[in-house]
Amino acid sequence: MKLLLIQERGRHEKNRNFRECENFKRSFQRLGVECEIWGLGYDNFNVSFSEIVKDKDIIFSIENYDSGWTPDLSQYSDKLKIFWSVDSHCALPSHLKTVIKNKFNIVLNSIESHQEYFKNYSKTFYFPNAYPNDLIYPKEHIEKKYDVGFCGSLISDRQAWLEFLSKYFSIKKDIFVIGEEMVDAICSYKLAFNKTLADDINYRVFETLGCKTALITNKPPGIEKFFIDDKHIIYYSNPDELKEKILYYLNNQEKLKEISLNGYNEAISKHTYDVRAKQFLELLGE
Image (cartoon, rainbow, N blue to C red; front, side):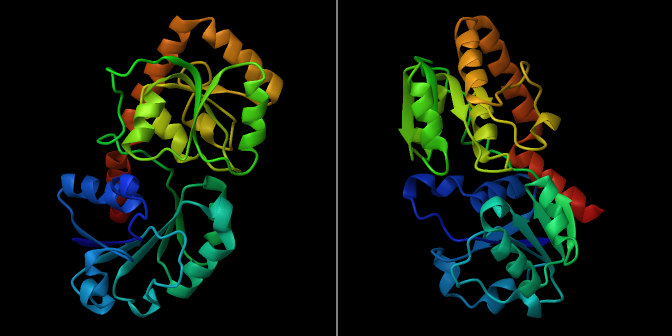
């Protein structure tokens, strides 16, 4: 079996190895699957797509933000075509258009409820986000010296939430810190704050647990199927609850360490790219 991964190469050098296509390539190769990445920015992009794809059995597109460079896949009816819709909470109309245009056989949805939108056009499966445990892991030499930290971008209402927290706590803010520096930052927090954009279980959930750092997050639909409150993770529903829970856990450091360990064990056993690659192959078997 030969697999072609389609995604634009990362635009930030520090983050390129963390891209979904790169993570999957390494995981598939560890499973003995022959695969190649093709997309804007890669050295092989100047090779015609028809030449690239001719010896491939499966086309796996992870390109969630097509800027016009992706080929028309509808003509390749002899290939099994799969699309992973990761950011449908931000780009649902575009993803639907992509699926219809390219006649994908299978759509993998990282948001379980969004399968409803695609089921009339393709076979769908729930396929949650993951993290690369070969790049993201606990760095025991880094001291957890910050009580509360946030690593991410200030989009949607995150700025307002951080302003609220800053009234009560000293927050370490690592805005748009990426790549290995992101891992270092998260490893330095005792407790990491997360706020998803919509109904997405975002990458930061898995990445934080993968660093063996305790995470406090809102509750997007479905997350409680994966992580139990006060065991693997900490949930909040409103600002007052967020403040109260942070105070409680900062005053109960042993409990916080226990949650961080439990969350790490759950993440590394069930939510790495190696696990997702195996699940991908199992879906093909079905």
